[in-house]
Length: 329
Image (cartoon, rainbow, N blue to C red; front, side):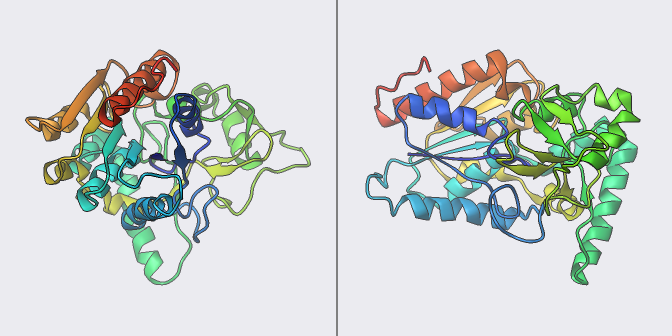
């Protein structure tokens, strides 16, 4: 059994389903979930990312699969990507029964990611931090969250603002995903930004009858999304208060606190989760295997890097579980 969870503000339909399909085709049972406050899971306010609650969601998923009649409770692996890749390291240090861990482009060190974010856009990083302070204070008085983009350009107050962020994040969405009317109107006035948004996303007609906006991110201009057939709603937005907690989160340090076999799939050119820092956390640890990919943070989800990562991950798990999985999937 493999439990899969995504990264910063992402939902299952942002290519996590593609990994799950490959794993099931190779013979693995897979549970994929959305974190609370996001996607198909409940929790209000929407688009809130609470690090402690997300780790609790991983533990809840573990508790659930351990109740299933056909699951060997001693043969469960965790698979996390990006921010989820950091979570699985922390969770593995808290649960010794986990049999294997796969962390893809993992967020391992808050200070390192913060320094990288400042380099990609110093002024927008200041704006992001200021919004985080205002949002935190507002939360004490019950105010609605201040929503800022998960991915954006260097001048946007986005959590991830690397050169590949907007194009890379939007490329994870299924073809035909629709964007809200409000954001569509904004993009028509910003052709340079529109050029970075994946062709997978369709701009809603400004005078159209259907407005693909639910309670998810209604107050965000940064991008409210609906699946091609209305099967999911998401938003390129997170509550700004998260930025004050990111520098304090260093899940890479957890690698020294457990001995579970672990595969780190590291993107060499990663600006969101710097590869150098991740490899430093793993250095000298016999239970940790590092696999490098010559790509940016979002490239590993698609194309040739996706194909190679899936093969490497299936091979790693098959080796750990002494299982003859079809690693050619």
